[in-house]
Length: 168
Image (cartoon, rainbow, N blue to C red; front, top):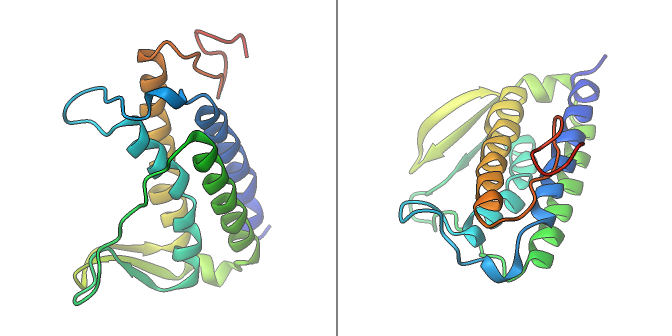
């Protein structure tokens, strides 16, 4: 079985779970912050909506520089509404899924590097980037969103089994 065929079911499952969480975000609480050191709900939502885009960047080039020398550092444009976040997320997921489906084993096993001002932060096979840096990163922030939802008295969806709010 090709690596992309093994990866796609997990990708689809995690994207569907993330969308379930994004759908629950209270529109009137986007500027809410759990703690002074925490992101606002808007910032967290923006990040989650953008994370699938990293799949296309990972599969389309051998590296990505967060702060290229002589260039602009990466910035995420904050979402204005939950509808904007869902639209951005859906667009990024569709592009990511297409990129994974088109990637052959040699592409997925080729090294990819994350850089900052030209210096490597890390380098690993693309498939490891997809699993560790993109999917696991999304799951981490989705868990953070679940806490935000709970603290705002919003029902947390069932993801891997029942939540305290849903029998699942």
